[in-house]
Length: 219
View (cartoon, rainbow, N blue to C red):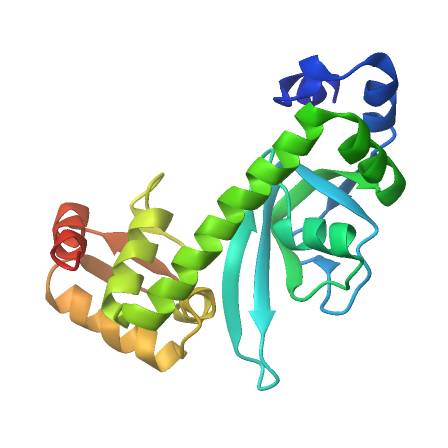
């Protein structure tokens, strides 16, 4: 994993003692579906994802979910970072979406590097600021955009690598914080418009350019 450490943007600005502290981090592997953190858990370390994907979401008392963000390669968890800085418990749930490998830097080593390394501090706060900006955009989207707009944007984002999406209607509903029936109804309307084709457990995007044009009209 030395190659991963060498790829970290702040590594060249650490001295030997700071690098030693960084190398104290535990390397952990968790399978898809594993719970990384539950609501109310104490945050014991600073997470940097090596590979895979971790989904972070809130859950209401009625069991309704709202996806906040996903942690991908070289990403960090802003909520656990916030907990480490403020001494709070974790306010959401983090679950492995794709088999994940990550480093967990202890709270003591995290505090030391935050105190002693300007480069590490910049990495942490830059990640924090970017994620906070994305969360504010999510709040604005929920408050001011129609479900059709949010659904189109979500599908285009998920289809950036492949036009065939292996997603259930419930998974999409959880990501958007709405009901499965609402998602199913709007997907059917999009299918009637020729934007996509529906089959069991899959969605084929047929006209992403039409969806992009629709989103531009909403600006």
